[in-house]
Image 1 (cartoon, rainbow, N blue to C red):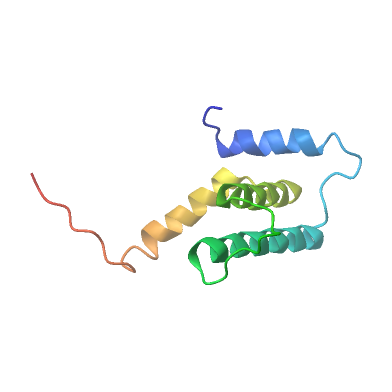
Image 2 (image 1 turned 180 degrees about the vertical axis):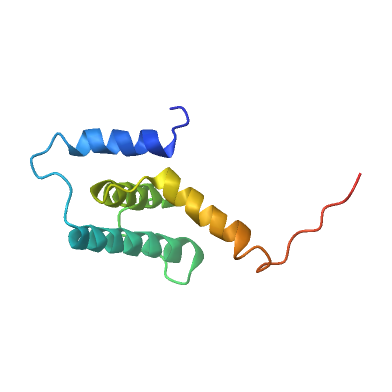
Length: 112
């Protein structure tokens, strides 16, 4: 699979969801789904990096799967509210480049 823009991803998700009569969930239900997926990602992070090993009966999931699930719901949420994620991303990056530009310690680069 090749690289996709956020717009292409949003279009692909919209085409998938629009084939079902139910369509997108309400914003409140979408937030609940996102919270559920974030919880599953948190569980995986805790298994891999924390102090809570998996039970032998637990299904093997990957961080990639859980991040993908969370991302899918995020895209659905954005689509349901007609939010262009590329524009949203540009807004947040502009905020980091301006308001937060001196917030973190920059890595010194060596001049050649």
